[in-house]
Length: 369
Ligand code: SF4
Ligand code: SF4
Image 1: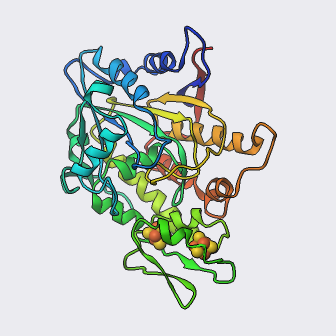
Image 2: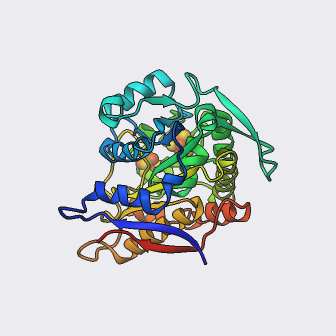
Image 3: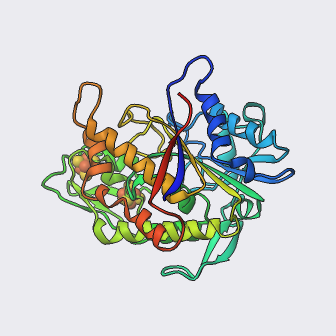
């Protein structure tokens, strides 16, 4: 028997709108057992880089906060700073960005606290003794919280193909040392014969690591943070990365970091995944693209591996079915989810299962109409 994963479609009617379904999922998945009275509950979100419009809207987060707090616990919304220079680079700017996107005490019922502190150095080492890491730096506010609700927006991702719970935990709940370790292996290179010099990659590289020399795109590998997004952005498929080894290693590292994040949360963690606005790129970007598939719905589970397996299965099935007219997925969707590196996305799940994080076997239980 697999791990239970609860699923509600995105559609609704008068008595079962999407917010009712969030409440029903919270109840059915047994999250009331995760949060105790007076607990400090970290609600791990992604507030979206300013310019992105497809992050999970605060109205959904408010419903989750309400469910937590009506059980006498105290929620705070949290995320960590990012590796590269952006509006979420330090806690001060991150808080302003979150406020601009409507995440605050007034709108969500919970204050925002950046989990790894002002400059991303407030971390707690947790022993894991796994293949890559002996210890994992967990963002202290997440480590110190009594319980954790992880809210994940499922998208594509340049480095991991699929961006879901394990990526959310492994990247978003850890300190900078861990983020650097995940990205350190990735080295993009150019195929000049395919490149049209459109400069799309250059203009969007978060590290400023791309330039043009003698009419050829050049990567500064000392500056590159290995996010892999230039590969996903290039519609000419002119950028290559040795994904087979490197992306798989990055995914294994994400799973190990996730195990460190969850080490002190046994029976104290619940996972929500939102399969709405499933874009080829994650919410770290300062723009949004069209979604890759029609909105699917919401998932809840206590197993981070099972919930990601369901998310992947539902998204892949939707991509294969095509859009309303049965059209093929667009180039960016194909490259991210199904392309040369995208097909390797399932390593994050197989390795997470190997190290005991959860099970890829699941029982899908429908909730609501
Ligand atoms: S996005 Fe692709 S085609 Fe455009 S400049 Fe970069 S590598 Fe060349
Ligand atoms: S992987 Fe590409 S987009 Fe990311 S930092 Fe390196 S050069 Fe820039």
